[in-house]
Image 1 (cartoon, rainbow, N blue to C red):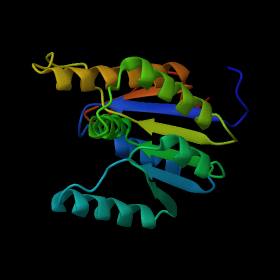
Image 2 (image 1 turned 180 degrees about the vertical axis):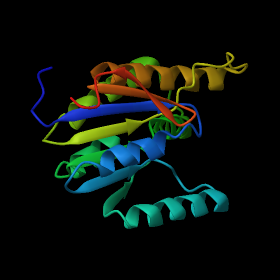
Image 3 (image 1 turned 90 degrees about the vertical axis):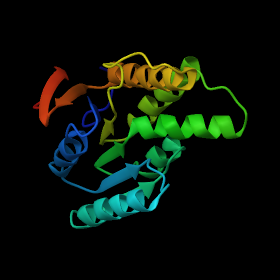
Image 4 (image 1 turned 45 degrees about the vertical axis):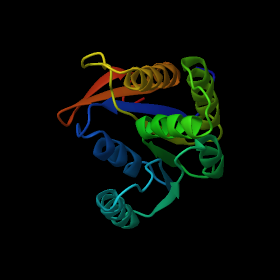
Length: 188
């Protein structure tokens, strides 16, 4: 595929509460060496703050370095280039954060911009001898949203997922906690 030996991109998708994060963390924990967890979730209320704190405690027992970065994933990937494995959780929230930032600055965010950003993410993930695991939600399996902003969000997440899955060595879909291998093989 034209990338360094030892460099891999694993793309993990699925519905909400399908077991994506647990699966991705188990895959990451099986890789020896320094681990970095890039969290994209901003703290927006007390319940979410408690959830984030619980996740931090769980990772602390497994020797994770955590980078909380809701928008600048390129910088976070560069800052973690010495890790053996980097887990980015999740791209769906990252797109939400990008949309929010664009709206705050009265800017438009379209599929072409997301495609370009995701190509840059894939290139940054290919830097160094490491495995980068991207976690995302599969949003395109339900009804077409009734309002414009929800359709835009679904379209941007879909473009992001397609772009990164195309560049990944391995693509796994989680359904009810069961991983389905869509691309590549776990033992490659």
